[in-house]
Length: 601
Image (cartoon, rainbow, N blue to C red; front, side, top):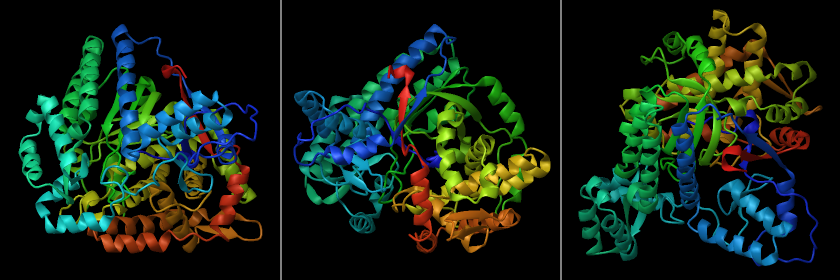
């Protein structure tokens, strides 16, 4: 799972426009953000340029990079389509308006904000979600489900038609209403691409049966391979061309690409994931497909399209893998009873990001995939530490003022880049450890639905802090590094604004902060508006919260998880709001431009 919003929960933004003067009399059509609403967002944007050296790549690898960037562009468009069904139309109309008006600041800002959010719904400075173009308001189910449907309607349909449950809750299906137009469209995709008809046995017959008696109140699910058939066929072609180009330079990478191309058409990622996790690529790596489920606000099960192309830092990675030996002992030390066996040599690496697309485009510092339990139990997962983001001096300088604004003076020097790196790394390792099935054998994500991501990300955070004590006793962390990991863990739990319930990371961060406050690990001084840390309580308090999270995952009780999240996600303006305001005032940038040299930006 992606370690989203590490180094201060930065939101992804993708463009910064110069502050050209504009006549205040210009009025945009109804539904478009006026200049007074767009300019404050633009003024809070910084730039992060990623330009790794690719000069030593072989000719086939350079061709592979060019081809995969084209695949990434397809996935970017698909992601925008998944988030909002009016995205493409709204963007085209905005581009036309920009040209018509001569590209003034007002429309340039809106083009930037579109790229920021991968669609027409803006994340505002006060952490709200608003349409900044003339489109319908955001919906929790995005376009993974019929637009605007509520959770109860889906649950009622599944309760009455349990045979549909697996397809409706599958990570890579689109849920539709069974109206004639939708059914005919899906059947047309099968007819246009016979390979999909072959790879989706029984689907045509099921669609034709529904078409014989269409019912707009009924629901059905169609695989991504069919819902996005044209795009999947184009991506498949490009991926196979990439494999041809790179086969002589890196046979294992080429084999993975061929399997992943077939995965996109079969809608089954097992063959590609098995290659991805167990192979040893030479220079390039790519996370390619639909993995993360954070955007599904109804059930937390639908995966969003994303792609991250990177090159490995070989020497750094080899040294890191040596340092991570002994994971079984750390697994056995965790505060739960049903320990599992873990791999001694996990696939982990330090990478320089070449370009990101879709859900993957962000200042994320690390990721871990795949996520489906049956695949991870068979093959494991791959951890990619995004080194050129983690090490970026601009980001490091940007988040320190917020830390220094909210902690008492004796703690200000505790936060270090090394501590942040260790927390990022062990957070991702933390996803490898702990509970992954409930006591009755269900995958935790199936049992806990939208609560799963909150608790899983909290678990990983807590593991990174819990095992720090054992790593310190081993000599892996010095005294200063242990304190830095602990400080990074505390900074992680602070937020500039009240989280929305659909914000996975921000929600679990507030929950940790409130628990730490309750247990005396963190203390708030209302007179100075700062916090202090009792490091002597750290390991015990983290262990107690981690044990509680493990128990919720093991029991698989959705109602109990709901209550736990509600209890600890409370936001108080006279506490959290005070800290958040100080952080906002100290920060020069709230949002970041992702500038990829490989894309010619």
